[in-house]
Image (tube, rainbow, N blue to C red):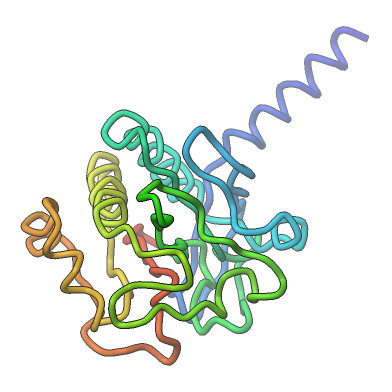
Length: 222
């Protein structure tokens, strides 16, 4: 019996330790051994339990490690801030409607960090009524109802993602965010770093990307 349990444990450990493999591109690819992001952590949470159960929060194993390490880093550098990730992709990648990308485990959406009326960092409300946050529209001042975009927290998060990617021998390919709101990120204390290291979208995408920012990770694929 002990021998059987050991064999089961051994092969289970191998499965858990197996790294993901991505194929093709973010717009035409697939994923093997995708990893599902945790429901929540000390300073972050997912955008929807329903979406998680539907299998819409899987990423490449290296992307998962980068995201979680970045959140861990932010616990120390920005302890008062909270963050929320959104759509990622399916366990095996492939078409991910309504997105045009998110097909090989390297694309991740993050809801913008926001401040409430008192200036406290809070999670942007995401629920079926507002299409899990994707139906929210911020004005040109970065405001929506009682919330305002926390550009300092957002910039800190992007920097943390980039640094953790580089530490692991990878990089960020691009960040898609509403071009009209991008200048606010460059006005933060992280502006110079962002200008030198991050490739932002220059033109408005087919959807605005104001309530969330899309990050494509640069990790070698087959």
